[in-house]
Amino acid sequence: MSENNGNTMGMMFAFLVGGLIGAGLALLYAPASGEETRRRLREQAAQKGDELKQRYETAVDTVEEGVGKVKEIIEDRKNEVATAYQAGKDAYQREKARHTKETA
Image (cartoon, rainbow, N blue to C red; front, top):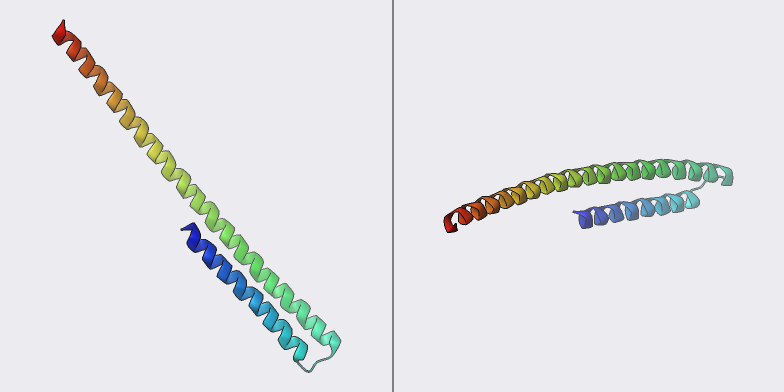
């Protein structure tokens, strides 16, 4: 699961970087004044930065949710193992007591 998330995040990051580079090149070669081009570059950078921040926050939320689920599963399994261990221990004690009575 984490490998798939890593690939997806890497692809999204590469896509965003490619988009930023493409947008920057398009603006640089567009017939506009230097001031207009710089303004458009700032706007594009701010927009892409906001998008990247939002995707990052979504990824963090997803990871935190996954960690919570894993902790929950581990706690459930820990309780199951403890219950099984106690049942085995009790069964051993009963059989030991029964065996002791039979040999005495």
